[in-house]
Length: 502
Ligand code: MSP
Image 1: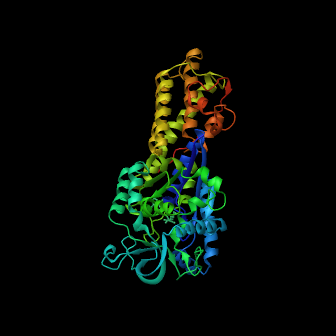
Image 2: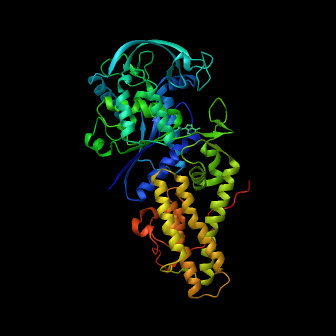
């Protein structure tokens, strides 16, 4: 059995969850669900990133301790993920004892291997990025290139990670595992950063206490990013359960936004190497979800929360839009109109209408008992091709293409019904064959769409009379034509996806 370990970035608790965070998490969830469906052993991790100056200041601004503030926001993330049917197997918080233990153990290994040392440091720091910048990188010599806010001069003695000495090993890794970072353009960006010259990086702070203490020098805490990255190791037992860690690492698939490429594609593999651990198997980088052409941010006041959309679209409509319309990779502009259009076209008109038609005609012409499909038909060929294309698309982490393929079967089935017009025909074998095929197509669509439509796929399954859970089917039967047995009571229910008037 293959193992599939998938992670989202852990989200900062200074900010409330918005549809940009949800975009990564819903994608990871759909991938996790797909891999469970094909029988892989899956571990799906998300969580919250709770240390650092940014969080400390956000807490102070609200008159809370960092811990109280982190408790609240972390809880909000959990609630929002539950409202989107996110099926994570674990939720990690970097303030948990297990994470302190793993971070300290991994860093101690890198220290013992000679890759970390103490040096004085003075630099220009952006608190929002939690990162130092070289003067040349600043806008007008004083503003953070991302936040356009003034950087601060910070002076301290820091522990440094000797990143510069990992240049060759990183380049070797990139050339020996060409698919490790996707898409290709992001891989090239990472290789460019490495070739451009790596400086040693400061990984500890004495100026703050809200962090994981450096085990060999407790006056220091690790700088937030270097404890955060280690969450991926903590959750599978690094530092506490070596056998479990061995089992899951490095079969990890990190999903990240392009803003955190440098940390994941350069620093993280090097840090792992320093501690004697293999780099991750796969880092999939995606673009921004933009609102009005801009990245969502508190300062731009353009944040949209999932709760703003859920009452209108429902969980399935929400998930479907982001998985189908926002290709995983490039930037994409969020548009409410496009979301309504997609919902009406694919869910209300195509899928919802197919189920309504089939169940209505089965009620009228077959006494409500679904007939079995024919042994072979044009739809059987379409279903086989769709299954293959959808599987390949999920495999290359392209939910939009997987769903596009799946909806081919929906459209072809509607088209076949329009040609045969069983609603006009006399009951009999011909009508039975047409409806049996349509029910079989619906069964297969329910399986293939289940990573996106967590609720409707089960509802379709139930209404066409099938027992159990759509997600629990043995793969071969679920995938191949002929699985619908016939002779089942079909229920004509309320519209699955009522149309939305924009
Ligand atoms: N805490 C760090 C990550 C540490 S991982 C070891 C962090 N957190 S974050 O909350 O600021 O952002 C995390 C991720 O949220 C981004 O990388 C990205 O995956 C996602 N997104 C945040 N805003 C987004 C958009 N507007 N669009 C798409 N994804 C966005 O960075």
